[in-house]
Length: 87
Image 1 (cartoon, rainbow, N blue to C red):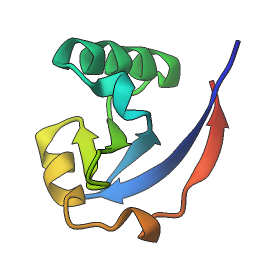
Image 2: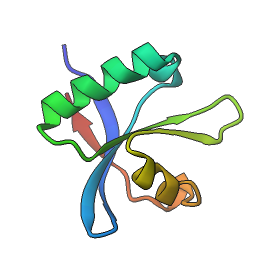
Image 3: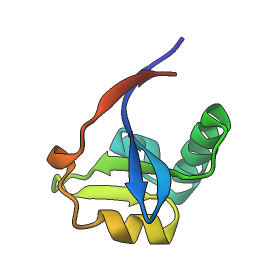
Image 4: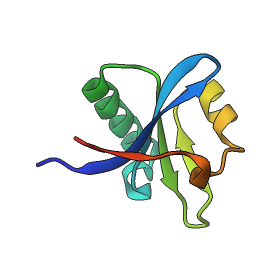
């Protein structure tokens, strides 16, 4: 059974990074975040992936490579042109 996720291919430092919005529950522990990241990387067949979740405070939580996460910290989620993908 597939699920729909908000996603976008976002340009960071000359690389196309895929941002995928996931539920906070899916990344609640380091183990869950690692499993979610591995699953998305395998499905997308790429390593440049950042998972995005809205925290309880509505501040975004980014999970991925530190250089990408650092660049995204000041980017408002509403300014990102999200699309939908079914996986």
